[in-house]
Length: 359
Figure 1: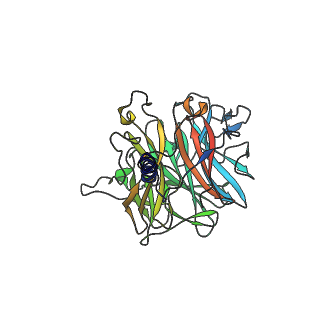
Figure 2 (figure 1 turned 135 degrees about the vertical axis):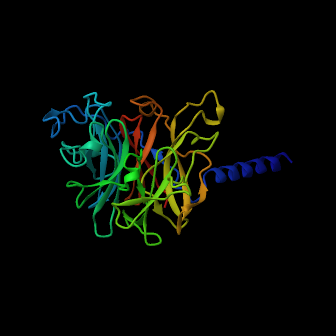
Figure 3 (figure 1 turned 30 degrees about the vertical axis):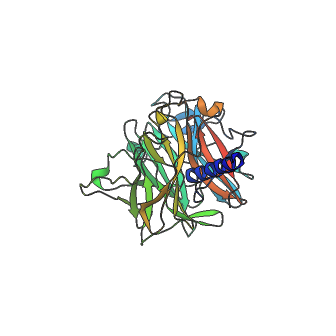
Protein backbone atom coordinates (compact mmCIF):
# COMPACT_ATOMS: atom_id res chain seq x y z
CA UNK A 1 0.00 0.00 0.00
CA UNK A 2 2.81 2.40 0.90
CA UNK A 3 4.51 1.58 -2.39
CA UNK A 4 1.27 2.34 -4.25
CA UNK A 5 0.87 5.68 -2.48
CA UNK A 6 4.48 6.58 -3.26
CA UNK A 7 3.99 5.85 -6.98
CA UNK A 8 0.72 7.78 -6.96
CA UNK A 9 2.39 10.80 -5.39
CA UNK A 10 5.06 10.79 -8.11
CA UNK A 11 2.39 10.63 -10.81
CA UNK A 12 0.45 13.49 -9.24
CA UNK A 13 3.61 15.60 -9.03
CA UNK A 14 4.37 14.88 -12.68
CA UNK A 15 0.85 15.89 -13.66
CA UNK A 16 1.18 19.11 -11.65
CA UNK A 17 4.46 19.98 -13.36
CA UNK A 18 2.90 19.20 -16.73
CA UNK A 19 0.09 21.63 -15.93
CA UNK A 20 2.56 24.36 -14.98
CA UNK A 21 4.78 23.93 -18.04
CA UNK A 22 2.95 22.38 -20.96
CA UNK A 23 4.47 21.06 -24.16
CA UNK A 24 3.63 24.16 -26.20
CA UNK A 25 6.01 26.23 -24.08
CA UNK A 26 9.60 26.89 -25.08
CA UNK A 27 11.36 25.58 -21.96
CA UNK A 28 13.65 25.01 -20.16
CA UNK A 29 16.30 27.70 -20.51
CA UNK A 30 19.63 27.36 -18.72
CA UNK A 31 21.50 30.53 -17.78
CA UNK A 32 25.09 30.44 -19.02
CA UNK A 33 26.69 31.17 -15.66
CA UNK A 34 30.26 30.62 -16.81
CA UNK A 35 29.99 33.48 -19.32
CA UNK A 36 27.25 35.77 -18.00
CA UNK A 37 26.94 38.69 -18.20
CA UNK A 38 27.93 38.64 -21.87
CA UNK A 39 27.92 42.45 -22.19
CA UNK A 40 28.46 45.17 -19.60
CA UNK A 41 28.87 48.94 -19.65
CA UNK A 42 31.98 50.27 -21.37
CA UNK A 43 33.49 53.64 -20.46
CA UNK A 44 36.12 53.61 -23.22
CA UNK A 45 33.91 53.80 -26.32
CA UNK A 46 33.14 57.31 -27.54
CA UNK A 47 30.72 58.96 -29.96
CA UNK A 48 30.42 62.44 -31.44
CA UNK A 49 26.87 63.28 -30.50
CA UNK A 50 25.05 65.26 -33.25
CA UNK A 51 22.78 67.05 -30.78
CA UNK A 52 25.25 67.90 -28.01
CA UNK A 53 27.98 68.64 -30.56
CA UNK A 54 30.63 66.98 -28.42
CA UNK A 55 32.22 63.61 -27.75
CA UNK A 56 30.54 61.43 -25.12
CA UNK A 57 30.98 57.98 -23.58
CA UNK A 58 27.74 56.64 -24.99
CA UNK A 59 27.60 53.26 -23.19
CA UNK A 60 29.39 54.06 -19.94
CA UNK A 61 26.40 53.74 -17.59
CA UNK A 62 24.39 50.62 -18.50
CA UNK A 63 23.72 48.25 -21.40
CA UNK A 64 20.61 46.07 -21.45
CA UNK A 65 17.42 44.90 -23.20
CA UNK A 66 18.84 43.55 -26.49
CA UNK A 67 17.16 42.19 -29.56
CA UNK A 68 18.89 39.48 -31.62
CA UNK A 69 18.98 38.08 -35.16
CA UNK A 70 21.06 35.53 -37.02
CA UNK A 71 22.79 36.97 -40.10
CA UNK A 72 25.45 35.26 -42.23
CA UNK A 73 25.93 32.51 -39.67
CA UNK A 74 26.50 34.89 -36.75
CA UNK A 75 24.37 36.27 -33.93
CA UNK A 76 23.89 40.04 -33.91
CA UNK A 77 22.71 41.88 -30.81
CA UNK A 78 21.10 45.29 -31.11
CA UNK A 79 21.19 46.58 -27.56
CA UNK A 80 20.22 49.58 -25.50
CA UNK A 81 23.05 51.64 -24.02
CA UNK A 82 22.93 54.65 -21.69
CA UNK A 83 25.43 57.44 -21.16
CA UNK A 84 26.26 59.07 -17.83
CA UNK A 85 25.04 62.58 -18.58
CA UNK A 86 22.22 62.33 -16.01
CA UNK A 87 19.63 63.54 -18.48
CA UNK A 88 16.54 61.52 -17.48
CA UNK A 89 18.94 58.86 -16.11
CA UNK A 90 21.01 58.97 -19.30
CA UNK A 91 20.19 59.18 -23.00
CA UNK A 92 19.69 55.78 -24.66
CA UNK A 93 21.23 54.78 -27.99
CA UNK A 94 21.41 51.42 -29.75
CA UNK A 95 24.68 49.56 -30.16
CA UNK A 96 25.50 46.51 -32.27
CA UNK A 97 27.55 43.46 -31.26
CA UNK A 98 28.31 40.23 -33.14
CA UNK A 99 29.19 36.69 -32.07
CA UNK A 100 30.35 33.50 -33.76
CA UNK A 101 29.00 31.26 -30.97
CA UNK A 102 26.12 33.23 -29.45
CA UNK A 103 28.05 33.73 -26.20
CA UNK A 104 31.17 35.82 -26.82
CA UNK A 105 30.46 39.16 -28.47
CA UNK A 106 32.50 41.84 -30.18
CA UNK A 107 30.78 45.20 -30.13
CA UNK A 108 31.08 48.04 -32.57
CA UNK A 109 32.65 51.18 -31.09
CA UNK A 110 29.87 53.55 -32.21
CA UNK A 111 26.08 53.33 -31.83
CA UNK A 112 24.16 52.48 -34.99
CA UNK A 113 20.88 54.14 -33.96
CA UNK A 114 20.44 57.29 -31.89
CA UNK A 115 18.64 60.63 -31.51
CA UNK A 116 19.78 63.20 -34.05
CA UNK A 117 18.82 66.54 -35.55
CA UNK A 118 15.97 65.00 -37.54
CA UNK A 119 12.17 64.84 -37.62
CA UNK A 120 12.13 62.36 -34.71
CA UNK A 121 14.17 64.48 -32.30
CA UNK A 122 11.07 65.87 -30.57
CA UNK A 123 10.06 62.33 -29.66
CA UNK A 124 13.50 60.81 -29.02
CA UNK A 125 15.34 63.45 -27.01
CA UNK A 126 16.54 63.69 -24.31
CA UNK A 127 15.47 60.19 -23.23
CA UNK A 128 16.66 58.46 -26.37
CA UNK A 129 15.95 55.30 -28.34
CA UNK A 130 15.13 52.34 -26.13
CA UNK A 131 14.36 48.61 -26.10
CA UNK A 132 14.78 47.39 -29.69
CA UNK A 133 12.94 44.43 -31.21
CA UNK A 134 13.89 43.08 -34.64
CA UNK A 135 12.19 41.03 -37.33
CA UNK A 136 13.01 40.42 -40.99
CA UNK A 137 10.93 40.67 -44.13
CA UNK A 138 10.78 38.07 -46.88
CA UNK A 139 13.04 40.25 -49.06
CA UNK A 140 15.75 40.54 -46.39
CA UNK A 141 14.98 43.91 -44.85
CA UNK A 142 15.08 44.41 -41.08
CA UNK A 143 12.20 46.05 -39.25
CA UNK A 144 12.95 47.61 -35.89
CA UNK A 145 10.38 48.57 -33.29
CA UNK A 146 11.76 50.76 -30.53
CA UNK A 147 10.67 53.22 -27.87
CA UNK A 148 11.29 56.92 -28.37
CA UNK A 149 11.40 58.73 -25.04
CA UNK A 150 11.32 62.52 -24.84
CA UNK A 151 11.69 62.56 -21.07
CA UNK A 152 7.93 62.54 -20.44
CA UNK A 153 6.18 60.14 -22.82
CA UNK A 154 7.29 56.83 -24.30
CA UNK A 155 6.15 56.28 -27.88
CA UNK A 156 6.47 53.12 -29.97
CA UNK A 157 8.30 53.80 -33.25
CA UNK A 158 9.51 51.93 -36.33
CA UNK A 159 12.70 51.95 -38.41
CA UNK A 160 14.04 49.82 -41.27
CA UNK A 161 17.46 48.71 -42.51
CA UNK A 162 18.99 46.54 -45.22
CA UNK A 163 22.01 45.54 -43.10
CA UNK A 164 21.58 46.46 -39.38
CA UNK A 165 24.05 49.31 -39.90
CA UNK A 166 22.19 51.92 -41.91
CA UNK A 167 18.75 52.82 -40.61
CA UNK A 168 15.79 54.77 -41.91
CA UNK A 169 13.46 56.14 -39.26
CA UNK A 170 9.87 55.44 -40.32
CA UNK A 171 8.25 57.52 -37.57
CA UNK A 172 5.65 56.74 -34.95
CA UNK A 173 4.13 53.29 -35.17
CA UNK A 174 0.66 54.75 -34.57
CA UNK A 175 0.21 57.70 -36.90
CA UNK A 176 -3.44 58.35 -36.04
CA UNK A 177 -3.44 61.83 -34.49
CA UNK A 178 -5.44 60.69 -31.48
CA UNK A 179 -2.61 58.35 -30.50
CA UNK A 180 0.31 60.75 -30.97
CA UNK A 181 0.72 61.16 -27.21
CA UNK A 182 -0.22 57.60 -26.25
CA UNK A 183 2.27 56.00 -23.86
CA UNK A 184 3.27 52.93 -25.87
CA UNK A 185 6.19 50.50 -25.77
CA UNK A 186 7.44 47.03 -26.62
CA UNK A 187 6.27 46.06 -30.10
CA UNK A 188 6.53 42.30 -30.78
CA UNK A 189 5.62 41.52 -34.41
CA UNK A 190 4.28 38.05 -35.27
CA UNK A 191 6.73 36.03 -37.40
CA UNK A 192 7.32 32.60 -38.80
CA UNK A 193 10.60 30.76 -38.27
CA UNK A 194 12.37 30.04 -41.57
CA UNK A 195 15.58 28.16 -40.79
CA UNK A 196 17.42 30.59 -38.49
CA UNK A 197 15.45 33.66 -39.51
CA UNK A 198 12.24 35.09 -38.10
CA UNK A 199 10.23 36.50 -41.00
CA UNK A 200 7.23 38.78 -40.43
CA UNK A 201 4.12 36.82 -41.41
CA UNK A 202 0.69 38.05 -42.43
CA UNK A 203 -2.38 36.48 -40.84
CA UNK A 204 -5.70 37.16 -42.55
CA UNK A 205 -3.91 39.56 -44.94
CA UNK A 206 -2.46 41.69 -42.12
CA UNK A 207 0.74 41.88 -40.11
CA UNK A 208 0.12 41.84 -36.36
CA UNK A 209 2.02 43.23 -33.39
CA UNK A 210 1.54 42.79 -29.64
CA UNK A 211 2.57 45.85 -27.63
CA UNK A 212 2.24 47.48 -24.24
CA UNK A 213 3.80 47.57 -20.78
CA UNK A 214 0.71 47.41 -18.55
CA UNK A 215 -1.72 45.28 -20.49
CA UNK A 216 -0.82 43.76 -23.85
CA UNK A 217 -2.61 45.29 -26.82
CA UNK A 218 -2.69 44.41 -30.52
CA UNK A 219 -2.18 46.37 -33.74
CA UNK A 220 -2.32 45.48 -37.44
CA UNK A 221 -0.50 46.75 -40.51
CA UNK A 222 -0.34 46.33 -44.26
CA UNK A 223 3.30 47.38 -44.55
CA UNK A 224 5.03 46.89 -41.13
CA UNK A 225 5.57 50.62 -40.67
CA UNK A 226 2.07 52.09 -40.26
CA UNK A 227 0.06 50.39 -37.52
CA UNK A 228 -3.62 50.51 -36.52
CA UNK A 229 -4.52 49.72 -32.92
CA UNK A 230 -7.29 47.20 -32.28
CA UNK A 231 -9.92 49.08 -30.29
CA UNK A 232 -12.77 48.07 -28.01
CA UNK A 233 -16.37 49.21 -28.37
CA UNK A 234 -15.54 52.53 -26.68
CA UNK A 235 -12.78 53.37 -29.15
CA UNK A 236 -9.91 52.69 -26.74
CA UNK A 237 -7.06 50.18 -27.20
CA UNK A 238 -8.44 46.72 -26.42
CA UNK A 239 -6.46 44.69 -23.85
CA UNK A 240 -5.58 41.23 -25.19
CA UNK A 241 -3.53 39.96 -22.23
CA UNK A 242 -4.06 41.37 -18.74
CA UNK A 243 -2.25 40.99 -15.42
CA UNK A 244 -3.59 38.23 -13.16
CA UNK A 245 -4.32 38.80 -9.49
CA UNK A 246 -2.23 36.86 -6.99
CA UNK A 247 0.20 35.60 -9.61
CA UNK A 248 3.72 36.34 -10.86
CA UNK A 249 2.22 38.73 -13.45
CA UNK A 250 -0.19 40.58 -11.16
CA UNK A 251 1.16 44.11 -11.71
CA UNK A 252 1.96 44.34 -15.43
CA UNK A 253 2.58 42.36 -18.60
CA UNK A 254 4.93 43.51 -21.38
CA UNK A 255 5.98 42.00 -24.71
CA UNK A 256 9.23 40.06 -24.92
CA UNK A 257 10.88 39.01 -28.20
CA UNK A 258 8.98 38.80 -31.49
CA UNK A 259 6.03 36.40 -31.34
CA UNK A 260 6.31 33.44 -33.69
CA UNK A 261 4.10 30.76 -35.18
CA UNK A 262 4.55 27.16 -34.04
CA UNK A 263 2.57 24.02 -34.84
CA UNK A 264 0.57 24.72 -31.64
CA UNK A 265 -0.24 28.38 -32.32
CA UNK A 266 1.36 31.81 -31.92
CA UNK A 267 3.88 31.80 -29.07
CA UNK A 268 4.62 35.03 -27.25
CA UNK A 269 7.18 35.19 -24.46
CA UNK A 270 6.29 38.09 -22.20
CA UNK A 271 7.80 40.01 -19.32
CA UNK A 272 5.87 40.67 -16.14
CA UNK A 273 6.05 42.10 -12.66
CA UNK A 274 4.09 41.34 -9.51
CA UNK A 275 2.42 43.25 -6.69
CA UNK A 276 3.58 40.74 -4.08
CA UNK A 277 3.35 37.27 -5.63
CA UNK A 278 0.82 35.06 -3.79
CA UNK A 279 1.02 37.50 -0.88
CA UNK A 280 4.14 35.75 0.38
CA UNK A 281 6.17 37.84 2.78
CA UNK A 282 9.33 36.32 1.37
CA UNK A 283 8.55 37.20 -2.24
CA UNK A 284 10.04 40.31 -3.81
CA UNK A 285 7.44 42.87 -4.79
CA UNK A 286 7.78 44.22 -8.34
CA UNK A 287 10.22 41.48 -9.35
CA UNK A 288 10.35 41.03 -13.13
CA UNK A 289 9.84 37.46 -14.33
CA UNK A 290 8.92 35.96 -17.71
CA UNK A 291 5.93 33.89 -18.81
CA UNK A 292 4.51 32.57 -22.07
CA UNK A 293 1.14 32.76 -23.79
CA UNK A 294 -0.22 30.84 -26.79
CA UNK A 295 -2.66 32.34 -29.29
CA UNK A 296 -4.70 30.78 -32.08
CA UNK A 297 -2.55 30.85 -35.22
CA UNK A 298 -5.54 32.09 -37.24
CA UNK A 299 -6.75 34.62 -34.65
CA UNK A 300 -4.07 36.66 -32.82
CA UNK A 301 -6.70 37.91 -30.34
CA UNK A 302 -7.68 34.44 -29.10
CA UNK A 303 -5.72 32.99 -26.18
CA UNK A 304 -5.44 29.20 -26.26
CA UNK A 305 -3.31 28.81 -23.14
CA UNK A 306 -1.13 30.78 -20.77
CA UNK A 307 1.67 29.66 -18.48
CA UNK A 308 0.48 29.03 -14.94
CA UNK A 309 3.80 30.12 -13.51
CA UNK A 310 6.95 31.91 -14.65
CA UNK A 311 9.74 30.06 -16.45
CA UNK A 312 12.45 32.66 -15.84
CA UNK A 313 13.23 34.80 -12.79
CA UNK A 314 16.04 36.88 -11.27
CA UNK A 315 18.30 34.84 -8.99
CA UNK A 316 21.88 35.82 -9.90
CA UNK A 317 23.73 38.69 -8.20
CA UNK A 318 23.80 40.79 -11.40
CA UNK A 319 20.02 40.24 -11.81
CA UNK A 320 19.18 41.09 -8.21
CA UNK A 321 21.19 44.31 -7.94
CA UNK A 322 21.64 47.11 -10.48
CA UNK A 323 19.95 50.19 -11.85
CA UNK A 324 16.60 48.47 -11.14
CA UNK A 325 16.84 45.56 -8.74
CA UNK A 326 15.27 42.11 -9.24
CA UNK A 327 14.87 42.21 -13.01
CA UNK A 328 15.28 39.77 -15.85
CA UNK A 329 13.85 41.34 -19.01
CA UNK A 330 13.75 39.00 -22.01
CA UNK A 331 13.85 40.72 -25.39
CA UNK A 332 16.06 38.76 -27.82
CA UNK A 333 15.50 35.20 -29.07
CA UNK A 334 17.27 33.31 -31.85
CA UNK A 335 17.47 29.72 -33.02
CA UNK A 336 21.17 29.28 -33.73
CA UNK A 337 23.00 26.04 -34.52
CA UNK A 338 19.93 24.02 -33.43
CA UNK A 339 19.75 25.69 -30.02
CA UNK A 340 17.61 28.51 -28.64
CA UNK A 341 19.44 31.55 -27.27
CA UNK A 342 17.42 33.90 -25.06
CA UNK A 343 19.06 37.29 -24.45
CA UNK A 344 17.90 39.46 -21.61
CA UNK A 345 18.62 42.57 -19.60
CA UNK A 346 19.71 42.08 -15.99
CA UNK A 347 18.62 44.66 -13.41
CA UNK A 348 18.54 47.23 -16.26
CA UNK A 349 22.34 47.16 -16.16
CA UNK A 350 23.89 44.28 -18.11
CA UNK A 351 23.10 41.65 -20.76
CA UNK A 352 23.04 37.89 -20.22
CA UNK A 353 22.00 34.78 -22.14
CA UNK A 354 20.22 31.51 -21.42
CA UNK A 355 20.10 28.48 -23.75
CA UNK A 356 17.52 25.79 -24.48
CA UNK A 357 18.03 22.58 -26.45
CA UNK A 358 14.31 22.06 -27.07
CA UNK A 359 13.66 21.00 -30.66
